[in-house]
Length: 258
View 1 (spheres, rainbow, N blue to C red):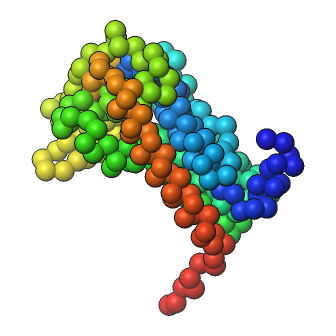
View 2 (cartoon, rainbow, N blue to C red):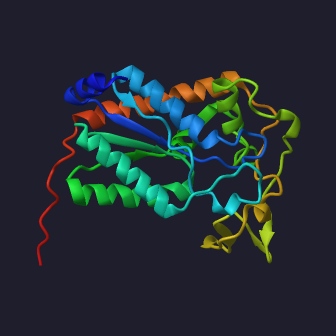
């Protein structure tokens, strides 16, 4: 886009969509999986609604995955600063509706902090969508009812990428696998373990969860299934951003009464 087109988009109230992801080990999936999906969602939704999408923020909070070559991690503070700075630049350019598409759970905490900083300093409230939650909520009947195939480096990411970037999944490296344990506690992720009927925070390294940086099953990715899921996801993002555009993002917060 040219600077004139940006001014025109901001003037008509367009939503600015910022994809956020990571470059990290994802089993047999490409290192950039976590930014490739939100980038495609942002582009598709923006084109459907006449909104704008920004180049993705590709590097994120991946410090638990550093043992796997190709992983490039940045600090939570840096992600927070980047998001706040980009959002402030968008507001200075005339945008009042900014929506993040934030993949990878550790990215959500600094992104949320940045959103609150922007709200306090500029009065603009931003929105954030989580592609991981969206795919989990919308995949429905598209995949087998088998929890073991889903996970980091497994489905439905494998099928989404087979649709978006055919041949990018290294099926020859896919090994269906579960997650490890730490001193008898079953690990749920590099951040949590199962204890009794609930879960506890337990920061471990990814290699303790999975020696390949992934779990689930990416051995049978299906582009047709991935395409169907992507369309559901992009339709959802487009529907939300249409609604978000109609919202007043500069409403004063409620007064506090003591």
